Image (cartoon, rainbow, N blue to C red; front, side, top):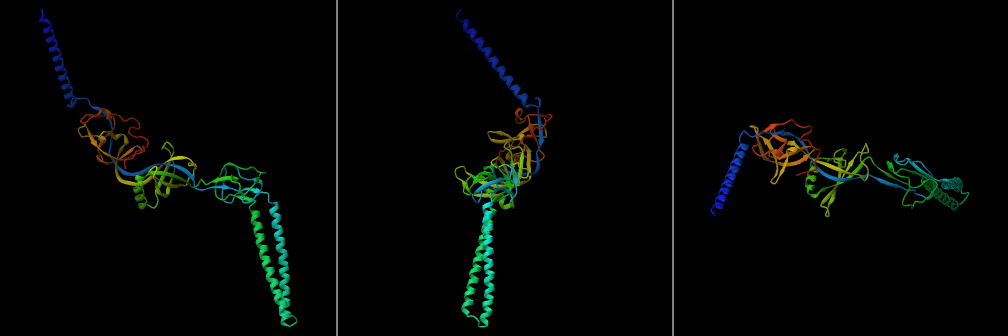
Length: 390
């Protein structure tokens, strides 16, 4: 009776051993079936490796700034008689914006003109006397001293008339300041003073602010690592093309060109500032607006490109699935220069004309058999990615 439990234990161990052996045999059979030609093919979407000229961009984030901004202030003190502009109006240089009460300055101009006329009449009379005295002195009817005295009087009156002319010009200038005109072309902002108020030349706020919107500037930053590439591009081309996009980096707003690269790197951020000018004919750019900026630095001739979805990421770097002639998948290590507008620029690893997997990679491994699946609309095309590797 004591030997029966050991018999049961031995029997149980035999059963477990058989189960383990059966599992291993099943696993080996499944593995063999997976790698032989009888395994089911994986449906994938494929594309071709192409060769085309590919632009190389540097991406940055910038702020729109007006090319010129002027606060319009009166140049003299006075009462604001009228405001002739509308808020938000486009104005040109010289357009009338406002007028001041001009009566006092007009009277001053009239007074200086009258004084000039009076002194000029005295000068004409003195010159006539000088001619007569000169004639009499030649006849020895008067002495030379009288002639000299008359000459001095004529010179004095000429200087007085010149002073009057300067006074008239000054009065005319002061009177012109009662007409406040636009110093630059642009768009006026909100009216800061209403008609009827007394204004002063020393007022800080002014009457209105004019902002030049055409052309307009964008100041953006680039990592300092791009400085050498930026200098190389500047040396190779007369102008560098810049494209401004909206905050989603989807819609192009305007195209311009670089005007200046800052002369120092910001040590706090490790970036360098770049300023670009845009024509802004459609007013898509507005002062203070944040935009995404793309700076064209090169065009890669006959670059190797594939849909962006082809590029896969792994612990050893980027790779792609390439379809061999026997319809099996090969894992190929690749180097990516940039991913832009749904296309990836490849520097090594792929050859033009090869077939690559665009969709369905998650089911694949090296050696898997594949079959072509119908491509979904837009498969492999993605919106622009800001990622760069060069």
